[in-house]
Length: 320
Image (cartoon, rainbow, N blue to C red; front, top):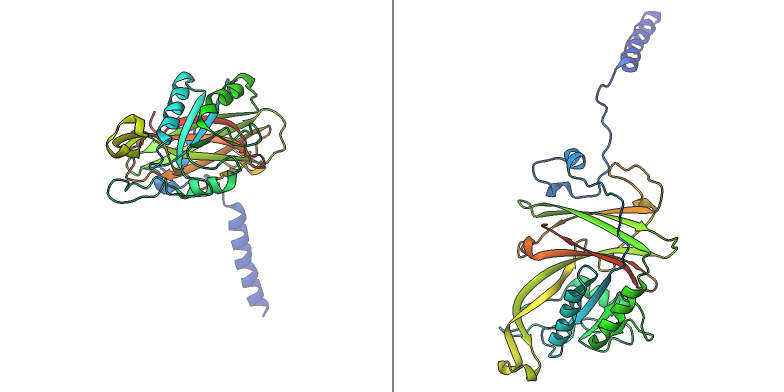
């Protein structure tokens, strides 16, 4: 019995000794990952972080921008005039006013957005557009065309007639109350159509609101039929080759109301907790085959989930 005990003790001693003295020259450190690595092409996540993951410099922007959401429909005869008004506002205020055409009506899809026959066969509605419409509709949204200007309340309501978009947007631009600053960078892998978006949210003033970030996928332009005002003299009041601009094609994370910004977003690419009032949200997305990346861009904004007001918006090209 003593002999067995001595042998067993000797074996245990050798195992413990060898284990305790092993030296790991290259210890494996778990990588912080919140993106879909299958959309990377030819590189692994470590290489991506070391070579392509962006580092944001100090944000020198001092301007608050405006997002006008134009609720429209391809069968709405008055919607082309609203779209033209939005186009003119953007042209007059480059890099300050951005626009998006959301094909949705009050509380959802209406006859203006429906598809029918061979002419109005394109479906411009999105699940996220429906989600947004259901969450921010108020008494001012009685039909198309109608729009929001940073979803800020004017005259007791969020939705406004397009004839007033310019004056309300000018009010916001002149006040220039900047509470949130945004930066963004994109890496695009064409072979896998992988879009990797990295954003920095800088909370400039102490804010206790529920803040959310949303990323719209927007098509620059596409051509399909549109009902027109009779005064524009198109056959059957339909322009068969109408150019729809800034078309909302959904959200890259499938969340119409976005992602909540929390203390968990105060981390760098390796999961280290950061100090200060800067937050980082990262996204990965496979661009659908039907979209040309050179004809697409992203609109990134942060809003207050209680009031729905948009505090800042920026534009990011998929291919710069």
